[in-house]
Image (cartoon, rainbow, N blue to C red; front, top):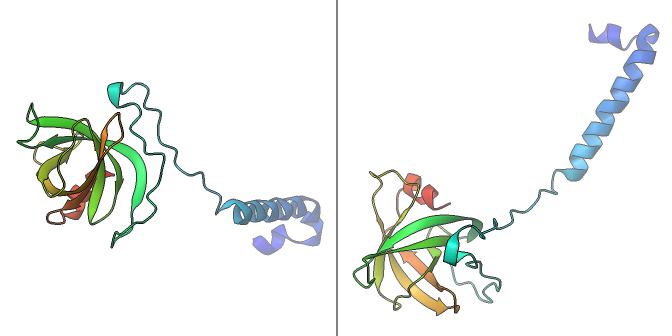
Length: 160
């Protein structure tokens, strides 16, 4: 059947098809590596946390695992150090070893808290993180956190 399509009498019809396939192949090969990088979503409608995007990357990254940025994931953090017991926040970036969080209240390095993604099912366990560093940006606190114990993969994926 394919041989009939490329026979000399069908050449006026088969040649444009071959050219179109070749053009599509070239376009695909040229643009396959040019994917759009994800842009942090507009946070204008998210209340006082609207500017929780770090604009200055760290000069030295001491992580043992690869850091991944991505969409901001809303979380709830709980600790006896918080006035209300809980504190809303966002995951700014993540790795298999820990998370970078943005919260309204800061915590001292070495202390711990429990976190859970807002969209996680109620049966999802809280994850304990240890604060390794805390920076006051003026609008929020950015905390580098290490997992006390690496959570299961299905829980880790809930943080983005």
